[in-house]
Image 1 (cartoon, rainbow, N blue to C red):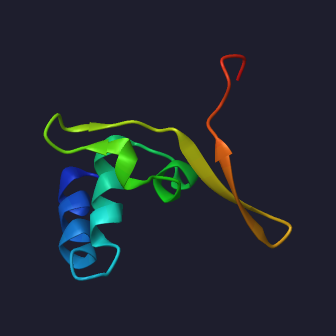
Image 2: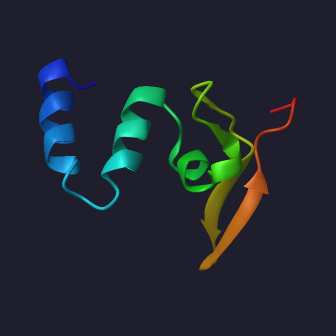
Length: 74
């Protein structure tokens, strides 16, 4: 668990990285890595400020696969 000052320091440095926005999204949403990587623009409604997690991206046996999220049983 990071202290607020640590989060701020990390995001200051991350803002210069090409994936800075992704790091910020991860920090403030709690989304998992596969969920973040599976996002598409159609999953994001900027005016409503809503992100819908529909897919996840995983690496298995050297292949990258797009999968649905957990089922209702998961």
